[in-house]
Amino acid sequence: MTNFEFRVSGFPRLSYNESLRLFFIESGIFFMTSSDNPQYKDRLAKLQKWAAMGIDPYGQRTDGIIPTLQARALHNGPSVTPHDGQDSAKVAGRIVLYRDIGKLIFLTIQDSSARIQIGLAKQNFLDRWPQAKLLELGDIAWFEGKVGHTKTEEITIWATGFGLLSKALLPPPDKFHGLSDTELRYRQRYVDLFANPDSMDVFLFRSKMTDSVRDFLKQRQYIEVETPLLQSVAGGAAARPFTTHHNALNIDLSLRISPELYLKRLLVGGMERVFDINRNFRNEGIDTTHNPEFTMLECYEAYSDLAGMMELTESLLVRLVKERLTSLEKPAVCDGGAAVLHLQYGDRIIDYTPPFDRVSYGELFQKHVGIDMWDKDAVLRIAAERELKDVAKKEHEVLVGELFEQLAEPELDKSDRPTFLYDYPAALCPLTKRKTGAPHIAERFELYVAGMELANAYTELNDPVVQEETFTKQLAGLPAEESMARMDDDYINALLHGMPPAGGLGIGIDRLAMLLTNRQSIRDVVLFPLLKPHTVSPQKPVEPTEAQMEADVAKLEFDLAKVKATTKLRPTMFILETDGTLRIVDV
Image (cartoon, rainbow, N blue to C red; front, side, top):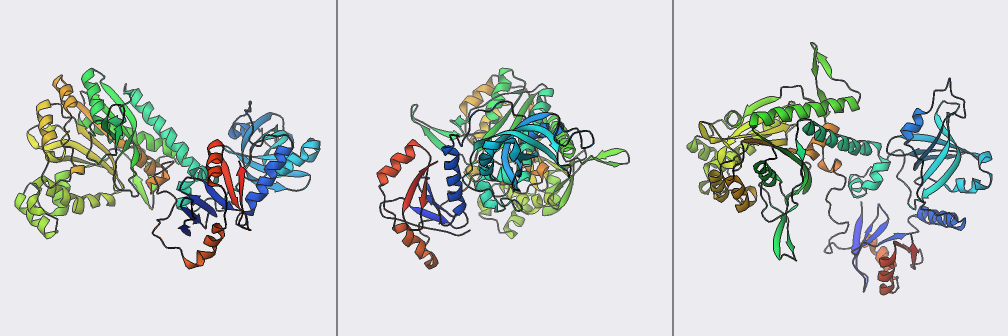
């Protein structure tokens, strides 16, 4: 994708995208060169023809429409249904295929449920036939008629009525390749969804998956609650928050990094089983498994513990895998009479058959680091050998955590089984209850699948004295953004009133969707992932081969004030003609 940018005197910075054939400017207005995109000019002319006929090219409310999948079900089969159909249906959708054979037009429309072919015959429309000829790929329209079939037995609605609902001024992507540019799919998800059926399927399944999570928890008597998005103390996780300022109250606030401390306040209040499917915001890196804005399930159950959360997590995941296999029409494999739950992820098959694998933190550390994690001298020696930074200044548990991340955690990626990793060093887990008889161990687990951390759970710490101590203790050598040492006086006050023993669980909904839909990037399961603005750094030099483009734009002469006034009133498109003049078009 080729981009370059430059400035025109008295006008905001411009950038040109060769692939899109669009000019982008800082204010969000965009230019399109008519010479580069002749289809736009042709489609604009057709829009004007619709308007000249007295027809609103952007439609009105339309009643009586049914999903195309439901319309297809009205077809009784080629052996019993007349060619021109029996039952009538009214459908609407985007035109994705179009074939004009003179007095007959065949087109296919697509809605969120399915596709169906439409047949329009000239003899059925008489004076409206010129309107039918104006329909083209990408337009959204409704059609009504009997559900029959063609000679080739293709289910077809033989239209007796139709209407335009939205005129597309830009053509859809090539029907054979769809929208194939990965970054463009993320930037223009609105095109990706209708151009790539697989993408639509992913997000429809994600919605159903989230509904299933809710149903599962409600069947277990959990109630769904909401927690603050703006928080005065960013607690409940080790992460760098996004910050903002509330003008009326004159206080600094953080966007939520976790709802944990608010959900546990509700346990104090007597709401014994609560959950929140929430948006969290962490001002950290971006990669295939991390997006700064992401969705989490967090749930808390009074009188439960780590074992209870382990059972809940396993049962929920097994249920979701079974539902995914059903949606893919791939039943569970039978092995000696028992169901085996296999689901593909990338080039591997993940076996979700319960019970999931279990391994302790210390056991995995011993196996792959080669020493006991409580042997301080050995840990110092290995840390020095691995050239960890500032070894002498870091506390023992911090070094253990760094060695584990380097040498042991990557081994979890080699397993094709979900694996519970449990019994963490207590110093790394300030919100977790200590193990009975072993206060240096925290009752915590993380569930790893295909090398990804999918879930995190605790036996919750409910001792206010210990909690206050862990809030105030900053481990030496642990970066501030990786620490939970943030005092929340109100939360301590809540614990002083008494919180019942409890288990708590967090599951990454985005990563769960990745695993169940076989997507290797979190951006593939987030409708609108965070991306850099579509401009190029002003420091980037203009390539000599693009000098002519700069010269063309320099010819533009127009009243900037008029442009600003126009764009405030209605959507406006600016078309750069081949002679260098600028035309303002209301769309």
